[in-house]
Length: 279
Image (cartoon, rainbow, N blue to C red; front, side, top):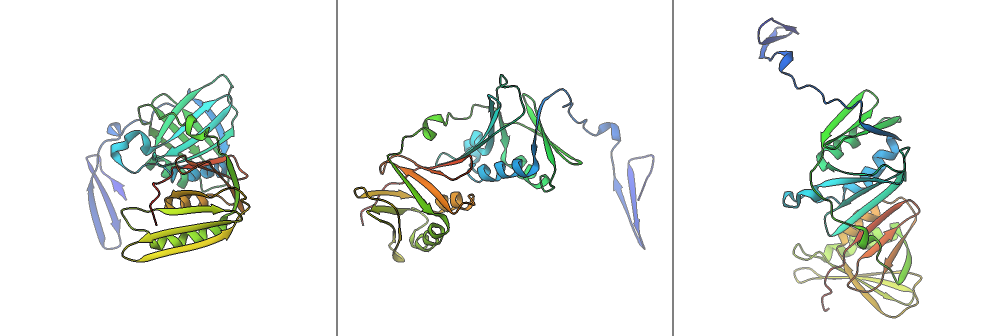
């Protein structure tokens, strides 16, 4: 490959020759200065895991602009990462080496988040640079800089603070298998599976007029009265797939309030209930 003094670059390979229009180096955009930005470090594995465990819940609807990004909120030396589309929410936090008096909110576009996950493939440290209008992540020899989304992220504190009167430990792999089976009996207009809790048993039921009915069950450590609640099975599966534990804890109260799912990590997931249909 060679470049002329004009606006032309030439590429020669064997008998092939290509001439490409080029531009002067002075016209190439300058990289923003980030050296004076607030910064902290994490292992690439930790940063990647935090983003993967939250970005799946981000909205893909452009009309919900502010929800098409992942929130970084920093306070008291802890970074909390949140993704939500209004129907589900994923949150995870960890301690970082920043002054506890520092606070800030940063909403990173989902496309940038996906690229950050890609560059976190090496087992090394990631440095995160924070600025009012942009964020940068440096992993090894790669530096990614992106503009932030402007706006106020919805206050998610009331949702994650919901009191759950019932706490149940569920076998994750078994529940994944049962949800996949019964989800076949949902339809596109209403992806809804009814969770029915009776003493010692959880029954999952779905109806579809064009297919039929599916009903499966599993043993659970429940001894209360009949409790019914409906969830989107695919949203529930997404949450279960982003945990690695054998058991997950489901907190519920009634058919109207959200379900809270946790595991042994610092992750927390919220899933909104759906309207119950008569059988």
